[in-house]
Amino acid sequence: SKFSVALPKMPKKVRNAPRGTRSNYSFGVRKERYVVRKYRAKGYKVQQSKGSRGAADLKATHTSGKKHNIQVKASRLTASGKASISKTEMSRLKKSAKATKGGAVPVVAKFKGSKMTLTSAVSGRTIKL
Image 1 (tube, rainbow, N blue to C red):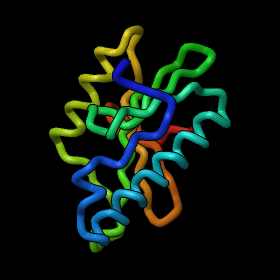
Image 2: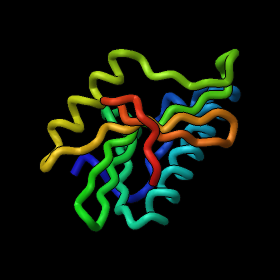
Image 3: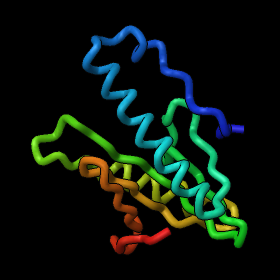
């Protein structure tokens, strides 16, 4: 399977990257773990993409059958403090959600500092867990 429950292993090119780059990778992984904890607390079963190379970083399925394909965006590098998702990433996320068996809601989890906002990639509306 493309997804596993275990956290992704740090890619070799990141392990060998300059220290600042590596800490940014770790920052992103910590935010992904935070999203996983929040979803699991609400009764979702969550799988993480290996190396976060897929369209969605996380795939969450609730016991009710509701599914979310989640792209986590967190950055300390942008001047505004906001992480952004490119049009290409957004398109890939929507396509992967549509292709998911039974359909899934494409969700973008953005962080501003420690505050997380979940947004539907289709409607742009804020999602509450």
